[in-house]
Amino acid sequence: MTVSPVSPAAAGSASRDLSRARTALTEAYEADDHLIRYSSAHVAALRVAAAVLAVRARPVRSGPRRRVQRNAWVLLSEVAPEFGEWASYFAAGAAQRAAAEAGLERAVTPREADDLVKAVETFYALVESSLHLTQPVLPISSNPQSVLAQPWMQAS
Image (cartoon, rainbow, N blue to C red; front, side, top):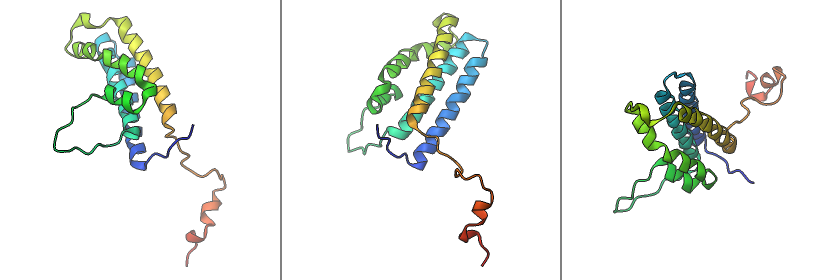
């Protein structure tokens, strides 16, 4: 499979989205309240989806008629069909997340919250590996003098 290059802006946006997803997932792990755990995990999943959309979605020019708005899960299924089942799974939990955020105790069980956290962790790992965002920051050379020896570093 050939990986198309990702623009620096898209890669930066996706990296920020993944970082925010990791923060939300950490919040879910640390929450004692199952409603907060569920809600935080679902938000993390949305941020993971946003990372995929940042890299793969392309803006559509709107004409005189306004386009129908689509949610992140619908867009994810369109631009990354390999994540379509994940999109369906998380879309199905959106109403439960809203109920959990409203504080409805019976909206989500502790088991459902734990299961969602595990699912988001798996989704995160799959997306992170599929986006190929990790690039070596420094050249492989371990010689610290190599940069200083470059002609452009020499005093004129």
